Image (tube, rainbow, N blue to C red):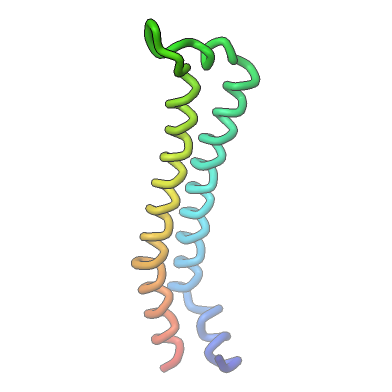
Length: 103
């Protein structure tokens, strides 16, 4: 990529808006994942009695098992959502900005 194209992209208001939108989205998704994981760890640390409760009479599984699985499933889902949006909307928008700057 030439220096002129790089300068065109860096000064393009659409590019700056795109970067801000992408960064905001990334931060939100990161916070969601961190809240899920650290929330579970804090629950383990500060309320282990709750997690140790049995799911039902005669059951060996505790409340912590489905919550832990839920954290894993939640993070897989938000990762899938992030990758899907990145591979569609963000890639298309970046390509359009590059095409416009190359003119």
